[in-house]
Amino acid sequence: MKVLVPVKRVIDYNVKVRVKADGTGVDLANVKMSMNPFDEIAVEEAIRLKEKGVASEVVVVSIGVKQAQDVLRTALAMGADRAILIEAADDVHQDIEPLAVAKLLAKVVADEAPGLVIAGKQAIDNDMNATGQMLAALLGWGQATFASSLEITGEQATVTREVDGGLQTVRVKLPAIVTADLRLNEPRYASLPNIMKAKKKPLDVKTAADFGVDVTPRLEVIKTTEPAGREAGIMVGSVDELVAKLKEAGAV
Image (cartoon, rainbow, N blue to C red; front, top):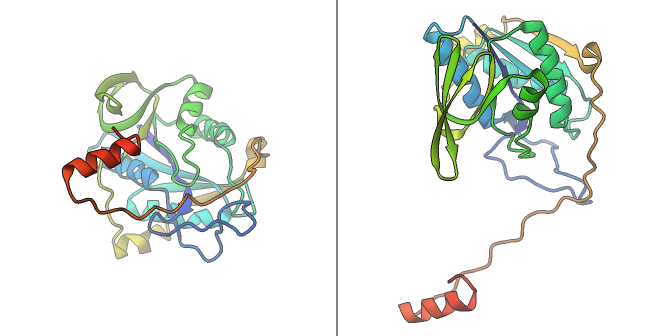
């Protein structure tokens, strides 16, 4: 079974995000970029399935700017077999919207015929949490989102999902879409020898036009602002004073 894993290039999660002075978006100049953390978890899960003998090949695909080759090489160094880059933008500030990404991924799925697609549940730059669900709808496949556990048995996938009330276990028929949550696994670090080997692994470069998909944005960002600064705390002398303060703030 072939496993397809979409990955996205985002601002590294350790970097403090800066908003442009004119409020038109996030400043990406001279900012460290890396693979979306949830996508990294998805790559790790696909590699583990291959190590168990469940998957025969792991293919990673990224949609965006040409610089996304970096995150694809990272995935290849982790253990993916080959990669596909779909260049859909020239400007690093242009974010390809979930519907366009899902349409492109649907085309890739038609070409690659994977038995399973594992994606991150959301990207940390826009927090859309929509691509996996849209892809499932376009393909007519079953989906299991927010996975904290994944088991493949025959032609079925058993997924434990993290929901507000606790954990939910669902079973979907393959082929299917699974989106990875934080506790699905702990991604491995790529070793230096594997990083060197990744440079020789296949990486195909295509464009959105090759698939006949229009990636023109449907949404317009009106304004981007930084969150309000955290207010300083106050010292209280007793439990009664603390309760009174909480009541004043409407916390109790």
